[in-house]
Amino acid sequence: MTTKLLEARDLCAFYGPTQALYGVAFSVEAGGITTLLGANGAGKTTTLRALSAMVRTSGDIRFDGRSIAGRATEDIVRLGIAHVPEGRGTFVRLTVEENLHLGATTRHDRAGIAADIERVFVYFPRLKERRHQQAGTLSGGEQQMLAIARGLMLRPRLLLLDEPSFGLAPLLVQELFATLRRLNQEGGVSLLLVEQNASLALDLADSAYLLETGRVVMAGPAREIRKDEGIRRAYLGY
Amino acid sequence: MELFLHQFLAGLATGGIYALMALAIVMIYQAIDSLNFAQGEMAMFSTFIAWQLLQWQFPFWAAFFLTIAIAFVGGFVIERVVFKPIRHAHQLAHIVVFIALFAIINSMAGFLWDFSIKNFPSPFGSHALFGQRLISAHDAGMIGVTLLILALLYGFFRYTRVGLSMRAAAANPESARLVGVRVGRMVALGWGMAAAIGSVAGMMIAPVVFLEPNMMTSILLYGFAGAVVGGLTSPGGAVIGGFAVGVIENLAGTFVPYVGRELKLSIALVLIVAVLTVKPSGLLGERTVHRV
Image (tube, rainbow over all chains, first blue to last red):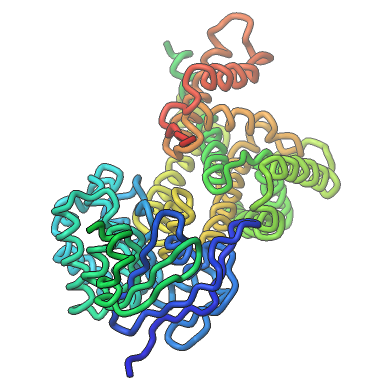
């Protein structure tokens, strides 16, 4: 039996008086890739924000067997959960290298950080060419790579990715997903992926959850979800 | 020509103090989007602490550095105790608290040390530098101290991890939290540093304007002018703005008829209004675009 790295049970989230999640339950296997699918407004981004304590939540979230509900965002990061937010959230006035250093804020091994910067440059060679440029001057695709690279600088055990393919050219998306697969297989990073592009996400993931208006309406191994008639029509478009 | 040069250098010297005040204002503005009206009073109170230490026979530089440390802790504590609880409150709440701080610190100083004017010594002396009449030793010292602080701050923000975290927290608090920056602590650190910078400004200007509870009122106004001229979002701009205001103030006071000593302060106000009308973002400030 595989172990669960992340497990959420009865997760609810609120924006002020408005409830956005209604008792969502899902899990990410250690070393696995889980994807959350759903239309706009289904609660995918909110689910990630709930995991990082960026919205008011109730319910239970367990990471590595320990409850992390009620912890502050900064402390959740320190457990090894890197969150690459929607719209990337890069520090546009800082240089590429400064952005990467910020990703390692919680670490204190100077040599390891320097080595990891070179390592992410291997995954994302474009960033190396632009290491001294302000992040705001990068193209959309490069900023997305920078955001993921910054997440990796934490040496995360779990990477939360919010719409990594958003706004990228199809070729770049292919490249990016190949890199994500490498990160998972070679680096052992577990992934929780929120994605509009259901077809791509289901190819990469091993388990999938379908969200609708703040509830999980379907869950299972990705290859079975892919075969489902309803999913195919609604989200895969054939 | 000599008069011009003399006034220009004197303007640079006081401009340095305005630059420091402008910098302190910008640091807090970056952190909490509000202007700290009590910045001048905090600086004044720190200067009184330095004066008290000198009365207790501390050597000047010991008192100087001890005061900076006390001011830093004071600023840090004010943020934690007064502003942290209201950080989600409306901006107006911040403004009201700033005004309250202003009044409290001002009358506390008056209560503790009374309102009589006191002499504050200059560590550089008041004699002319190199026996020339161009610039006094204290003015030269003020410029030197200002430049030294600017260099230290630049190095801190550019080359240290804490400095980088502070820049990240100011630029994008949410993303900063997501990489593990303790944003609240960075804000308090910013307050401490602003208070420390203000205390240096106070101790440097006190030999010129004399020490009393209202000594920083006009200095703060010039500091605001400097910050607005340079752009409230740009520390570099604030520094340039502060120096510019000092020079403009001094030259206008000397060469523009009718301005003289009495109308000098209104120059700061004219500058504020002019910049806000023509280029609200200031010289180097960032224009913020809000999506609607």
